[in-house]
Image 1 (cartoon, rainbow, N blue to C red):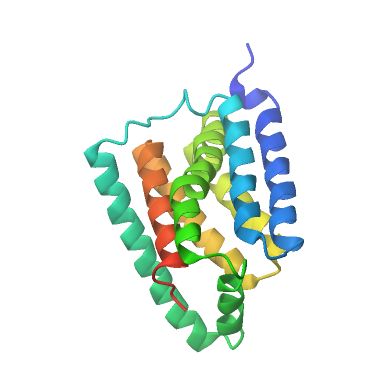
Image 2: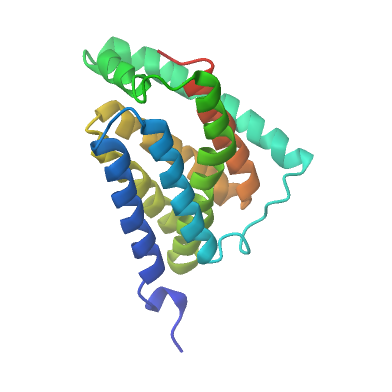
Length: 209
């Protein structure tokens, strides 16, 4: 009898390939419609994840405990990024310009619109795909730690299309943070709250640069 580890991870590989393509369109092609493209790309990933059963396989109650844990996690990650931004700007001569480039994407988009899209669409949709579908599938197939490491690696690698070292590092840190949170708690709703709050605040309310 074949176990899930014996079967080729067709759906996971297809999903990762889709993410690489969508992040290529979003980051490499650039343009003033960055926030619109990242929103549509995240939606496409969420549709794929839903098609592959991510909604049925994850806890999404959004009770007070989950919301509270998500808020605390978002605050902790913001503190990590604030400290990381201060240290990297001191140690790496190019860090400041690359961080500024990240915040310079999508010029002309009003911050309230960016805040809304990140909070309501992009953050939740990304987590449904990256943790709720890809990490869940890889953990079920190869074990918790292997699934966590593989997903974190892919999440950071798709950001290579930005050709921005600081953004790739940021994706690695954030991906590892949310991936560990998901692996530890087994609840996608906590991670969704954390990602949605963190991204909307750090990009549209209190930037770290």
